[in-house]
Length: 196
Figure 1 (tube, rainbow, N blue to C red):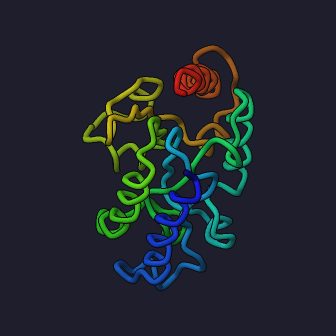
Figure 2: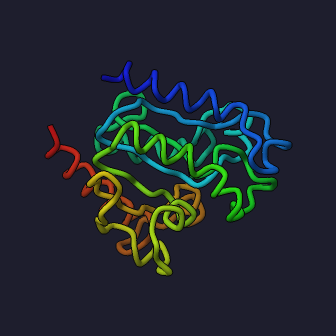
């Protein structure tokens, strides 16, 4: 199954490699198409590549990525075996600014194709940009996180805090972002384990 997914995803990635639909093609070092393992159970959608991601062509490789790996590992999941990771944008916006609407629109076909090919049963929306790209809501991530929403192809979607936000909020006290993330990842694992 993974080989079939990979073949279809490689075709989309090849198209993405030559993309010039927005101005970001002029400043990128690499497109950041995906990471982890293609599967139909668990997909994480992030915001946009940062500096390290742009340099390596891989999502979530900096400090935020290391924390994300620890969060998954805390419930026995790993990007090598269990999680497919992609971003709303495939190219880094200058100075890590928020993606512009036209940039998100230019990249939409690639993200839509990734979702269409894998039809993941769980989609994690990591950070407010990912939430805004996938949900029609004005609510902030603090109000949305930790709850399940209906996603494409009958998937369950849950907004979660971006690990870079957690790095800026170090407290682990009850009610803190890190404490809330711990509740969320346990709920995600509970639902994940119910899938065959």
